[in-house]
Image 1: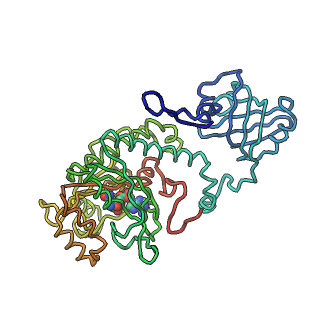
Image 2 (image 1 turned 45 degrees about the horizontal axis):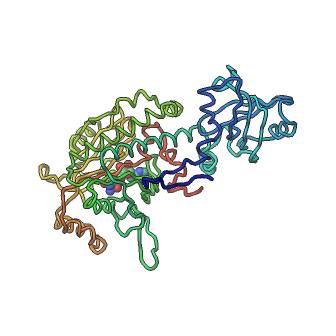
Image 3 (image 1 turned 180 degrees about the vertical axis):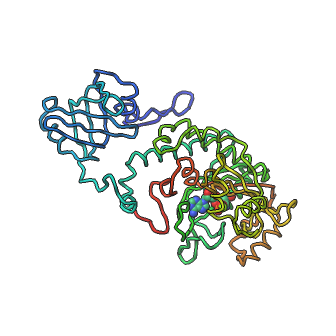
Length: 453
Ligand code: 4AD
Ligand code: MG
């Protein structure tokens, strides 16, 4: 039996633990961190490196927790197993039983002396060798994700998301599941992926925001983690066409409160990665110490201040233009904490952002920029609640109101002040892991140039 459930007298469901999960052989990481010298252990994994000299084979085996050296000596195990081990190429899957012995030269300081060596799945010659072009690695992404760097990255990403979920639970946000197929362009028509939806046109979602806005009326504080799609034609190091989007929406919260939520959430995500994955961070070239100070509060700069500062550094940027990658890089290059930029001019932001009554042509919004030049990781704002203003802005942009009637209804039935934001998960991973390119923050990147594998 794999797993099951039964009712106890108190009518509570008790789920019996899955036997496969409960009694596997120890993971390599456990064998190395708590070695039982002289005792037999069984491990299973994939051959990471192998070399043989006559009657002895040294195979390094990896699993998700680490790598261990296995020594296979002729005579210590059945002949056919020795021959199979000798023939096994890298990436063959294996199960090995052997005694644990100390060996200072082995990775982790211990090795396994094999008495049983079973090749479960043989491997063809592996197409990836030491020095490979970026293109070949991307063509073989389904195999390259087995590398130690990619493994470390995926673990850090998982911890970052775990940190978010923990924080969101502590702060009473409810996770919701908005649609991906939509008829609304939340972030403008330019980056929409259009598709034929039977006899109509629909789009892949750019943002769950409008649906989250509908959900706060019953749940107050909500969040979703979904793919978002942007038909970004530009080849940059920070744009994907499909990315993971963590979005929050909060009733009764203004733009200032929204920023407090952002700095606390981002800090919790970074601190979780630091706490659980400092070894992986080091492997990726990120000094974990540098992330320790990522705690609230973050600096707040107004857009107008930013423009003044950029101009004084020689940028020819006119008031009213959105900040590009170069401007964001310059602005954050020597920062060690993320920085908010608030109060963008209305002209460069989306229709749903609320006017700032204290600063007439700006909106109550904030972009959060990661330090060290990484740039925007969050876009957020307080939402316009005035039905007339929303309609006028949609009309001014020649957007047909039909598809937005449901959204406008949210202002007709008990509208409340509310705010929200969207965080690009691969953007935060790129910063935390010090990645050159955002595509390494996702196992199967989608960019203008690539949808395979
Ligand atoms: O700033 P954006 O476009 O804001 C929105 O979509 C809002 N509707 C979110 C909301 O309020 N619920 O996107 C939010 C974030 C950006 O700050 C960035 O981190 C990420 O999504 N992002 C991308 N990440 C990777 N590749 C792309 N092409 C991205 N476009 C946006
Ligand atoms: Mg943005």
